[in-house]
Length: 626
Image 1 (tube, one colour):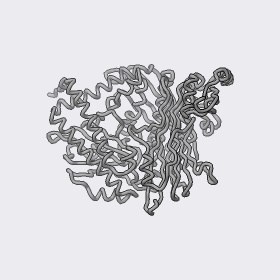
Image 2: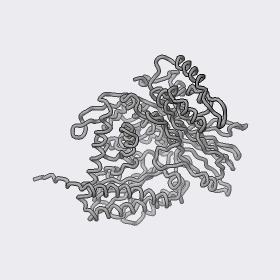
Image 3: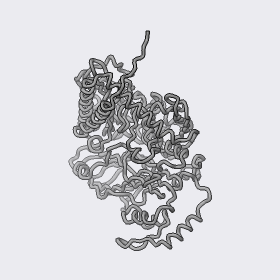
Image 4: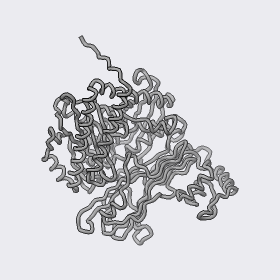
């Protein structure tokens, strides 16, 4: 006879304590990694994440995305795990979709209570170098994953507290930065083991039955909140939109299509409630170059949690949006449908993946665009808030060096506010401090500020990107893994696209030249400046509706130029310095003329002038109208 036990009632006070403990442990793990790691990418740029998962492999914390535990349990069943074990993997094709490229190294530690695994602590982050064809392990012209670095399927890196020195030696031997890699791995393993001890104490205090009941309550709350507050805002129906990566590093630039058909139904979800179906049919074929992403594993579990934060924009207020966590509770509300093998999201091994960032960032925008069509634009305009730039060579002492930086960009304008300037898609991540880089690498940072006029014009302006000037003190090489250098971040509901990514070497000098957004080894001479301008977010709403005082404020703050105010916003600004002012009569006339000269039927989305270059002169796609 089989009986189903009724879960114990959850004391709301204990639930708050358990939920708070999970957040505290997650933050403590990340703090420990940041303080004890060595590489600039982990220690200074903070390009890593921690997560806590239950024994059913469900992510409990919602502060950020994380990798998956699925591949570890697939290869090492729970009953074979022991206290002190640490598991490691970075193999993209054997990660169940949780790892996107080989520099992302993942460590997983099981938590034990009374001899059984009860949950997991995990950390994964982008490391400086794991081998491969180029420094940094992101060769922009790779045609197979074998060129991208060392692939490690799930292994037991620590066995009951004893590190596997042979495995560590193999990994560090394959890295151009062996000392920092070894230190980073030690930091991550030790931090996760510490987190496991903290969680074990939680189980000792309250007992397994109570803690696991709290875990379920945490996930149920997320499911119910998104069902009631978010999915209810999307009308039943089908909404199609697509966007594109522009190049893959191997073929000439073209439109690498990512399409989403979003279907909202009032039934079919948990307990017969609403459900979202995200169908990627229509996505383009896998690229020859490294922009592919392995999304079609574990029923798209990683992509569900990666994309779900976009839905928070439908919350009643910005304050409420900030309160909503995305954990495993979102997963039952979303069904993923993938095209057959051989597309950008279903690549066939050994297709390269190191620049898959282009695709997964674009998917955030594609989902936002599909939802925007459903809710009359009540979603943010587009953003492209991550790209990898760097320099490498010999330093002033003749030693090898590698400086990799993940620079942010502007976020899209929203229906209630401008976009934010120079943000990063990874929470808590940051650009490298100038003082640190100048003391360690052979260059000087001559400027780090906002890229003027980069934000897309709109009633609510897109956020601005960075402008950074690096003057080399010794000959070296520049590298870049970036998209949105032709196609801009789109504007919505009358808003215009932002400015694209741009790199210029020796601007104003005798050797001035533009650099491709995907480049591994562009030579830069001592004394030359590398000027990097990152993307601006798209604008929201008609820029001719932006109040004069807001445009004037932007000009005074240096975010919009006088010419930009005139050409983009129809605002005539006179004077200079403290005497800047708006000529309202001239501005009224200019805006009237600009409105009269507009085409009668403009698309709902503005992709910027670069789209026509790759679309045989077309100004918009068939899906850009409501």
